Image (cartoon, rainbow, N blue to C red; front, side):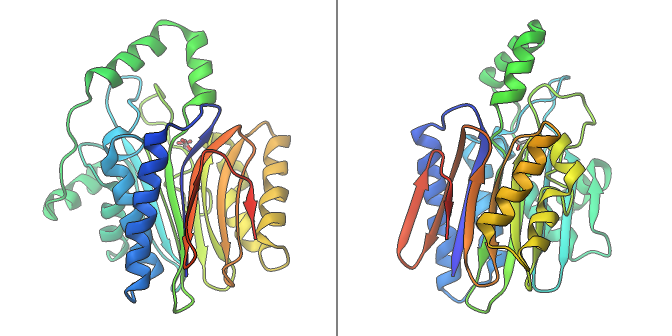
Length: 292
Ligand code: ASP
């Protein structure tokens, strides 16, 4: 059994608080795994905790778009049966990952705000609070200087994601984000796109990505890494694809696990808040290039 989480890749050093929250998320997710729960449920639980924290660019902490509105993206995938659920640009919902879980059991796979919001309301999902002064201040600052915006685009990745392997040999992956700070309303990154930001398939592996979605989408990064797990170790597969990404100008971070429980936490950015938990305990780092 293994669970890995990330809190985004970028040039900004993750805070102690962020690392503490990752530990909490790992420990709650692992509790599910060790009490006979599934990889899938552990991924949903871990991401929910990160969305609730307000510390990461997801759920309560999601970035504001250029017009001051939070529109959140998320996706999950169950490696056992390839079932997926995804939401794009959902407004006013605190836990998009819970919404993807509900959508997964509908005849659809992906919903944008109009439909997603109705489903969330019908299921009485918790509402998102209005943006606080700090988030509004950040947006104001970005809007004031275009140069600042470029910097923010390089530094403010803190999307969250998780991948897990349970005792039954099932794999699962999930990701949740507020996108990129001050992005144009309607912009969609990799996070809600199955195969780009998230992918899981029991006979290969599970992957969640973070970084500038515009590049990740072009390579279908999560799926590419997953398919390469057939002939490469998680480390090699992650390195191979991150190299390909950098050739087109992209930087990212990935968490990768294969069907045997070997894994890699790799990033081409300076930092990636991330960690893993196994029967040996929890390891959380501000930037790691770990692999087994
Ligand atoms: N991948 C996310 C996006 O492009 C951003 C991030 O990883 O923080 O929307």
